Picture 1 (spheres, rainbow, N blue to C red):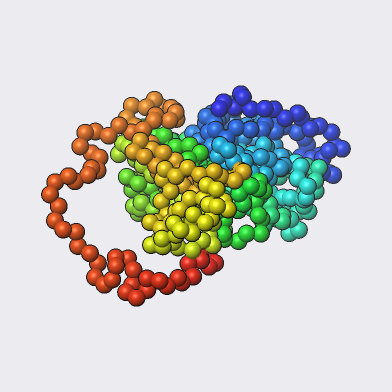
Picture 2 (cartoon, rainbow, N blue to C red):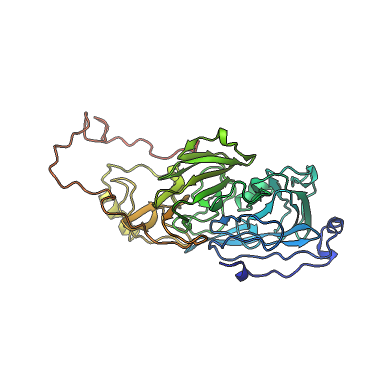
Length: 462
């Protein structure tokens, strides 16, 4: 979606609406516009209309915030407010965010830029904004009670500093942060190098990792949940509603991710090796990089990885914690593998028509179609050219194609595999299949009738 299609918020003018004495110190006669975005589509890169040039990033299922140049200062306007985010078609969440969405828009500046960010609070409680990873004056660090008074509802504060070093950063509240971050208040920040040729890549994707606990039939996250989340998201979208990362074969690709969940996330790319080239502390020296196919992003960290997309295809990109590639799932569910509960199912069906037997052969739900409660999603979903993908949450596809035009991010559809390059069924003669020693396959001798717990207790290390 073009930035031209974004709605424009009316200017907020006049000292009566502003934080006492704050805006006047910034010398601002009026506030810059605060554009809003109400689409979850991936917006086109925001080519800088003024200021110093840079190579813009692509915010997966998001957008970048336009600015106003005033007396050589790059001015932005963030509005903290309740928003409704479409996590996937058919499911919406009551979140808190910025400028119409959660996460808020990406802020892009150039190393050495002086930036002035107006923050208007339309939440029902106070807030602040911390500029995660920035080296700035202490009073601009955005920690309520420590470096500034909180921004009360209806007030506007101004943050002003120089973006001193290039890199990958975030912004989020440091006021009632357990509630506010659990409600989705976060955004991405990229400071580009002075020389656009430095660290240049062909495609540069950014997204934030977030998690929510939203019970089926409800719309607002349970903000007191510590680890048992049921929705794991890239930029507050869940697969299959996360856009693919489309790249041209031979492109040098950068993927930047920030982790604002309560646990770590090992992000894994199929079909390519990459190097970690940046953290929230800055760029990693070339001599300190090594090849990986998975990088672990701890809580509060940012990572930038880079690789040459030299292998065409549809490649999975996902968090390697298996629960994190699922959608709304229950945790206190016993393991039913090997348990014949068809008789029980018949009795349950008398009480709950439509109840389906599941779990006795494993957890696969491919092809199952069952009625869902209001405002929730199937645990596994998504369909590829060979059938059910059975993924959700933190999962998407890296689509590498030959011959794409520069700047073309449209989904090219399924990959057409060259003849002879797809795994296939063996139909020739087969020797007898060996069986595991002991009792019936998959069960310990003498333990066939034992039901032991099965409940998933706690979620340590999730």
